[in-house]
Amino acid sequence: MRKIVLPILLLIAVAGGWWIYRIKSEPPTVPFAKAFRQKISNNLSTNGKVEPGEYAEVRASTQGQLQRLPVHQGDTVKQGQVIAELSQPGAQEELQSAEARAAQARAELSTLTAGGRSSDVAEINGNIAVLKKQRESAAATVDSLNRLVKKQAATAYELTQAQSAVADLDARIAALEQRRPVLVNKGDIESAQAKIREAEAGIALARAHLALNTIVAPISGIVYDLQVRAGAYLHPGDLLGSIGKADPVLVRVYVDEPELGRVQIGQPVRITWDALPGKEWVGTVEKRPTQIIALGARQVGEVLCTVHNQGYELIPGTNVNAFILTQVVENALTIPKTAVRRERGTGVYVLGKDNTVKWVNIATGASDALRVEVVSGLNEGDAVMLPSDLAIHEDVKVAPRIE
Image 1: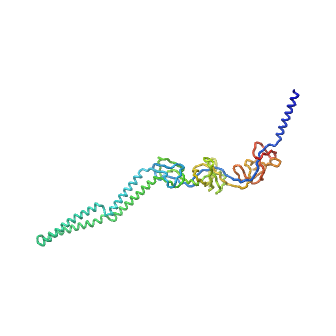
Image 2: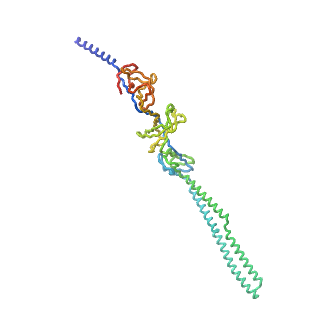
């Protein structure tokens, strides 16, 4: 039995050794990808923040309690629309007092232009009427004395006294007649007119004070940065919030300092927002940065982009993703980015005709998220080695798997 088992074990050992030798001697399977031509777009990917294209701050012009706040953060408003109302103590009473003074001044002017106060005019007219009655009686006495003097029934002295009484009454009537037109002079009317102007100015001022209690939108747009609530007490200059133009908006894009050389005015920009996945907004680069600033641990330049926002979905203050199209190359020779190595400069391992790998230095150009343009060093159809778990070096023979 032992004579049979030993040869079998020896045979198994020989077969296992031969299999291990064969496995080790076979070339390893390695993934490769071919270089081919395509349109490649070089996008600079970063982040940014939405700002209104045009905005206006809304501030209180007077002090008072915020009685009504009919708008909310994110509301769309039109220019001139009431967005807040204040309650200012004494403002309404000030207007009523000014209107009362104006009414009194107008009544006074009306009296003066009619010839004076009715009581003064009535008093003069009454006095004239009494004196005229007295004159009629005095004149009758003179007539009677004239007849009696002719008959020598009365003396000349009595007649003279009666005539003097008539003359005195005539003088008194004439004085009153002269007084009536001068009850009102030019200065009185001008003074009354001045009082009206002063009262009307008071009305205008009171109305202006009341108007300050009503705060309206200075421009049409979206309400943002609303900092107050109804019931708050405001002072002149206190900020209520801001109103910004909703379309287009500005996006302040933060570009890392080494990448700024790729950014030029007029380049297309694409915006996405994590809160609305699947949606995109497009625009253009409007202004390059004028300085480098610190943004956390980054040194960035602020690139201003104008972005269309027809649906008003991008709200000022929103943090967004930005993709600036810095370069487009038609018919570019491209390979996967993962194939590029930096061992002896920039290069790739290329599959030779005998299935051995060769190191080739290359020059790269534009790139997108997955592929990079090869400016020199490769030809169309060349197979470049992709990363694998195997340690492959130059002149190693491989079993290529084209992906």
